[in-house]
Image (cartoon, rainbow, N blue to C red; front, top):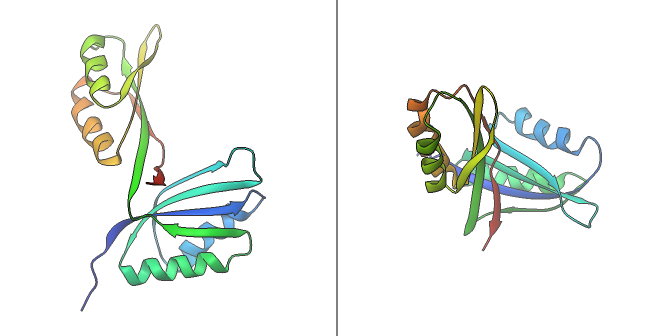
Length: 158
């Protein structure tokens, strides 16, 4: 019986030192696991960083990943989120010729806004649940985006 592969969010708390990220990504690549999204940031007022990793796999694969992560020396804590609040950000560059009012209205519906207007471009930003960011990016195609940049997911357990 083949187990279903599901999207999973894993947080890893590590000592903030050089080569930690490399060791973690090496662990994934050596075992053939894909990382869909990876976000790393220092934890304020500490010597630690939080990595938020989005991957996919069966329950067995995720258990294997978390066990292997626990074995890495700079790793303090690994946990897979069960009940979480997850957000992702996207920034989008539009030609200034597009309808700024329509773009802003759409942004506001997805927890976003226009963050910069230049001579030739409008830059908008949204921050929402990953599925909603995906929906927003699909909707705004009609406004001819010139460039789209997405962050990785960040998550906290409730």
